[in-house]
Length: 238
Image 1 (tube, helix red, strand yellow):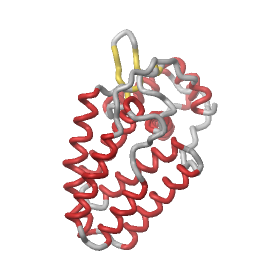
Image 2 (cartoon, helix red, strand yellow):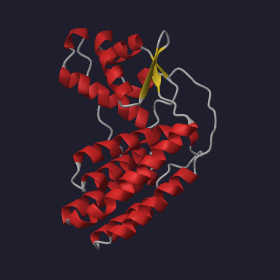
Image 3 (cartoon, helix red, strand yellow):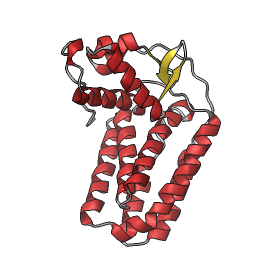
Image 4 (spheres, one colour):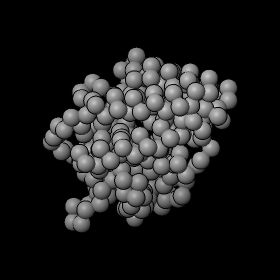
């Protein structure tokens, strides 16, 4: 079942506030990560303001934040659009994931406890359930959540935040260069990683993580897609 966060209710343009902006930021970032908003899609301030019932100033701040997170690209005179990674950026992201995620595995193996292992199993199970239900958007989100949660178990919040952003960018890369019908991560790889970490075999887990990430990268192929204007009302169900 898709655990997507509900879009906040519309309360008029005077209802802008920190909590509401945070919910809108999450709604837009989820739509990007889950491929409901495609790379290259234009994000017009006036259209988003109308969809969410907030001011264009509020939307502009949210888009600026998404740009800092590299999910959105801001272009003079053209405005905002969902980031479309280049082939070189795709290689760099996966190189970074190799260095960081593989490097974290020995520490995760030292720190992981029953609760941590169970949290990983639950995320893996949600991903598998989403795949069985052909809910690709949810499967992409759960896969990113799995890798982020795994990184957080190492106890270094800064590196975990970095891994989370790399996973978000990986989602964009898969949307641009991924093969049709292939979501990237294989869930049996996730289960194998959990088993190795529970046994304290951190070095083997690092090797397995490296193989896992290389397998995902091997599915990528440069395929140009036509850019289109997204139907914001359909995407956000408002």
